[in-house]
Amino acid sequence: MSQDPIISFQNVSKSFGEVKAVDGANFEINRGEFFALLGPSGCGKTTLLRMVAGFETPNSGEVYIDGQPMSATPPNHRPVNMVFQNYAIFPHMDVRGNIAFGMRKSGLSKSELDKRIDETLELIKLQGYGKRGADELSGGQRQRVALARALIKHPKVLLLDEPLGALDKKLREQMQIELRQLQQQVGITFLFVTHDQEEALTLSDRIAVMT
Image (cartoon, rainbow, N blue to C red; front, side, top):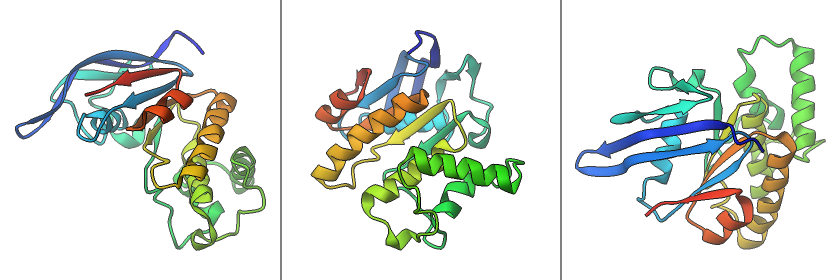
């Protein structure tokens, strides 16, 4: 893990009406780090994540990714991808179609795209599941497909908004181990939002505690 920052929050504030969700955030996240934002509901952790993704805009301050200010950069042009708590798996597509969805305008040939999909299926340990429909997958398998869809684009940062929250305790603990192993294998920065202290301690290199 490098000490070179990949994300920098500089005096970042965000309000929704009279509610100040984030107030003057100043910190950095290093390249290749598994970094957790830990805190209760309403503390602003998801707002910070959404500002990195470009789904929210700071009222003041700036978010930098890889040294570049992001205020004028739309979400689809940022070097990040996001995994949501509800996975957002498309029910009308099989596993391969879901994974390939974000690559439709990548310019890859069919053979190149098929190779990338196969590599990603192997990465998430779902070889042989490519033709399965969304309704044929367990919660853990849906989680893996959501991860694969985000990772296939090789983002510099993967954003995870309480991605294990919908799983039962046993499966959640199993996915924590797999998620940590996956991050170490791909070597990219993971920015992870959770309200679970044990989960944050299990997964993360560093934690920002928000109140």
